[in-house]
Length: 406
Image (tube, rainbow, N blue to C red):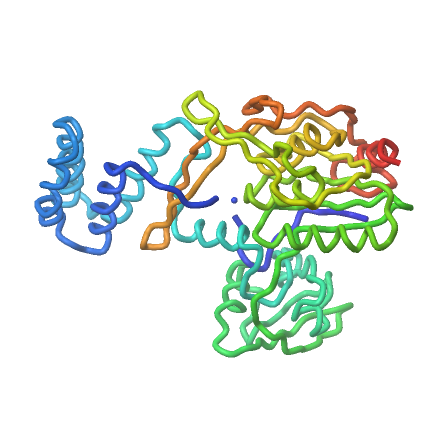
């Protein structure tokens, strides 16, 4: 089987919500109010007493200095400046100042794309598309199984020429995606070329689950590839696992190569399918102290051999799953050393649809190792002969993993 890089019909981007300090909340409230057009001077005076009662002189002076600089630019700069852009850049600068690449401010468009990917579903027809530059049309890269596009007869390799009468040759893949998602009716009319023959079909537009799991049975050795950890990944994985077990697998290979992470909860729930009740899945460290030890509280477990395939792009939730299975289940790690993202991020949604994403803790393996900027070292290190294609015939890492658990 093959696993390839994909461009999506809907825009994709890559955590959960938590709290800020009161000072940060006040600053955000002031900034957000400015964005929607309320007078900055009025906001300062209306909120000044609250700020005054909770913080020291340096904090108050800093907020006053920010408002003064903001007003000065808007009123006195030689060119007209967009106030919303100024605030966006100010928020970005605060988060960049922390020196943490995973703590950041995301604009509305990036937030929407990230939320869509992590939700594991989107409003569309179930295809992955990209611009085909030889013809200018939109190339169908993949069609999700049982999706509206699949049911309407679209296939990989088709060239979409028009959507609801609009010529795709003059549009980007993102623009075509927006036309489909924002269709005023419950379906779209799509014309496409297949083997130079033009065809037309009507496709229903609805919420479509984004596939994040692929599976196969290699003569009794189950194989499950996880592309990302979204809200729907656990259910997809569990269904795939149960189907493989019905097909009498004796062992399993879980592939998280090039999986850069996603929701911690999804990785944790997958680990719970295997690990015995009471054993540790991961630990959280805050300010140098263990803040939480997360253990398996379910009765479900497995007893067969498991190997986990990792590489330098296996990060975050992928590493949490791999470490949990290694330490608390006895799984073998095969491949190359992982990325080493040992921090946990949470998110705060702003009223205007933008997002603040920030680091709240380090996560540790069940055995207490901090892997941030270090990574997980495989039990069996294997180079991949052909990095571009994961298929059993050329995939030396997969072959080794199957050999290890067979």
